[in-house]
Length: 90
Image 1 (cartoon, helix red, strand yellow):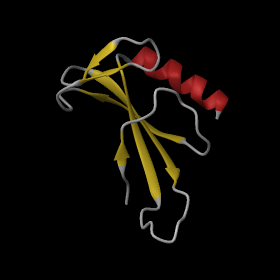
Image 2 (cartoon, helix red, strand yellow):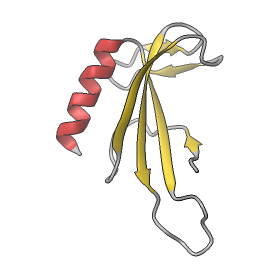
Image 3 (cartoon, rainbow, N blue to C red):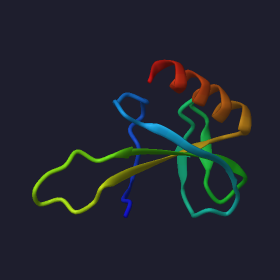
Image 4 (tube, one colour):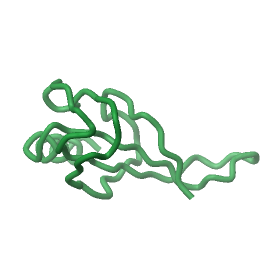
C-alpha cells in the first residue's frame, strides 16, 4: 500500500528511487512549482510527473510499507534534467 504526500522542494532524502516519468494532462486542479526551473505548473494543463518511491522505516504502529512522492514538472526537458541530477545525487 502507498501513501501520497506533497513532496519537499528539494530531492534530499536517502533511499528514494525514481519509479516513472509520465506525461499528464488534466490531472487535477491547482498548481505546483517546477522543482527544476521554478516555473508554475498548472496541473490541469499538460505537464510531466515524476514518481519517487522508497521503503518506509518500520515502526510497531505503522502498517504502510512503501512511501510515494509525486513531483510535477512544466515539461519533459525539466523532468529529464531533474531525474539525471537526482540519479547522480542519490
